[in-house]
Length: 214
Image 1 (tube, rainbow, N blue to C red):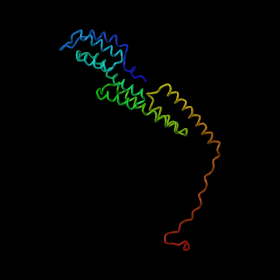
Image 2 (image 1 turned 180 degrees about the vertical axis):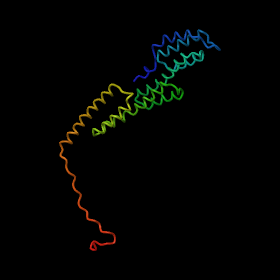
Image 3 (image 1 turned 60 degrees about the vertical axis):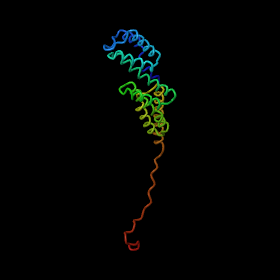
Image 4 (image 1 turned 90 degrees about the horizontal axis):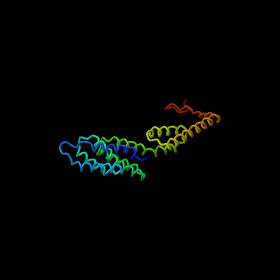
């Protein structure tokens, strides 16, 4: 799962660079054109090279030069997301889902309104439950128990399905159907055995009376 592809919009780079070159500087303290243009070039070079840390810092400086430019603010927000998404991706590559979630939560502490970070964190929280859900499916024995385990897994992981997971669930579902049919056939073929009668129990004597007195 390469989450960088969900964040970075590569096709924006050329158009965005031109927009920044043509945009006006801040009214109060405009930066020298050469300084600003060089910073724009470095900013987009960093984005092109997926260097989110450098792009975030350069974007922050651009915002200071041109605080009224909403487009710059949007690009900076994306790079701030990428900085923490990069960290989360490295943790995922090492098999550390908990560490990936922690990286995204660190980003949300600084940027609590960042929808991308929040969405990715929620997806990882769901994916963290996947091993337990799969184990419950494998541990189930009867067709009814397997159906319940499959329902829990498909409901929880509905927004995180992959082709491999879909194929696994389809095969599991087919196995449930075959097992349910076997269970029905077995129930029909086996004769019903009446339950043994309970032995008769004599009536207890009334309090204060001996058996002979009755």
